[in-house]
Every structure is written in C-alpha cells, then in structure tokens.
Amino acid sequence: MSSSAIREITIAHSPDSDDAFMFYGLATNKIRVPGYKFSHTLTDIETLNRKAMNEAFYDVTAISFHAYPYLQDNYALMACGGSVGDGYGPMIVAPKKLTTDEVKKVKIAVPGTLTTAYLALKLFAPDVETATIPFDEIIPRVAGGEFEAGLIIHEGQLTYGNSGLHKILDLGQWWRDETNGLPLPLGGNAIRRSLGSDVMKTTTQALRDSIQHALDNREAALQYAMQFARDLDTSLANRFVGMYVNERTLNYGDDGREAIKKLLELGYERGIIPHKAKVDFID
Image: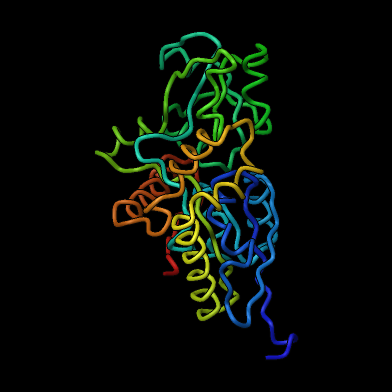
C-alpha cells in the first residue's frame, strides 16, 4: 500500500490518566491497523465538546454524554471507550459541611455547562446557580473561599480532602438511587459519521483493542498514563484508572446503554437539553 493510501484518523481526548491509559495501545503503536495512522490531540473535555458541536473537527473525539444530542447529526457513539461511574461520579464539595438542601441555595463552581457533571447537577437541583471555571481551578478556588461549593470531576474526586473540603453529595450515588441502580455514564467517544460505516467500525475495533491491551499490560499502560495523572501517586492513579477504565469501557453492557438513553431523555424532558437524543452505537 502506498503512503498516499494511508488513512489518517484524528483522535482527541482529555489529558487525564484514564483517557491516556485507554489510548496507550494506539498512542504508542502497540496496536496497529494496516492502512491506518492515528494522530492524537489532547485538550480539556469542555473544549472538545464545543469543537465537536461547532466544527465536527476530529474524526474521533472524547465527549461528555451531555453534549451528545448537540452533535449527534455529525457523530455516532462508539460502543467502547466510555467512562461510567458505578455508584460514584462527579461530586459537590464545600469548605464546610452543608446539607443537600443548603447546597442547592449557594452558587456552585462548575467545569462547563456541557459536561455530564453539570447535567447531573441540574437534574438534582434544577434552579441552582452556577459559575463556569476551568475544572482544575475548582478545588483551589472553593478552598480559597471564592465559591461556597464546587462540582468536581477527574482526579479531584480522590484528592479534594487534601484541600480541606467536604463531600456534600456524590452525584453518581444519587443517580443510582434515583434510577434503581443504573450507573452514571459520564464521558464517551464519538466518531464522525462522514467516515462511512467501514472506517467507523475499523476505528472502533482499534480503540477496543487499545483498551484491552492496556488492561492486559496494566503496569506499562499505567506508567504511560502517569504523565497525565495530576497530583496522584501511582497507587491513587491506579485506583482512579480502575474507576473509569474497566469492563464497562470495553462494553457498556445493557444497563450502561440504558443509562445513557435515560440520562439524555431526562435532560430533554426537564428542559435542560433542547434536542431529543437519537442514540446509536458503532460496535
């Protein structure tokens, strides 16, 4: 095959340890697909949501499930590569202990209005006032007294206590109680429909192989992912990666797929999302 026939697939994901772990096989060429070249861009999730929505820019992009209805005309969901919280997820934290009723009355710092964390927050507290700030500034600015509470994602879920903050509510737990045990789907990977069916399927399989490779070669994959593990030592990074890269990342499972549909349906019914979701998976 001549180099001109090589198909380049652009992949974008957020620069955190769980995403880096699942893309390890592809990023280091441990997983190769004849005739394909994969190039990687790392950007925070809210930027990726908006780029997918406004420009359909990357062939494969990490997205928040909340953002999917806004970009579903151009993208389908890959059936693998998702981060799903099984009874855990984004948390509301505060410098002092608040009741869940009290926290609904304060302004909460959030990491972006297209994040699934924000959608879950609005399902929990429809009238809550929020301010959007970069996700990695939420803990220091809440701890510093600028906000009475913050909504945290990523590694902050394991480290907020180091800044003297209290957990007020874990939205993954709340969601499980609300839905008779469903997991909370947070982030997934979307693939551009214009690639066509064959390329979409081949690329999805390549990602599944990459995730499997990381799970089979955990130590090497974790070592690679550590460069993106903000403020985590190896054992905490291992724990964080285990929370969000596991069997469900290879396959959402029936309840995982049901949870994605339910989350987006509720968002639409309650007026948080203006578009009815048409969820289709590329297996």
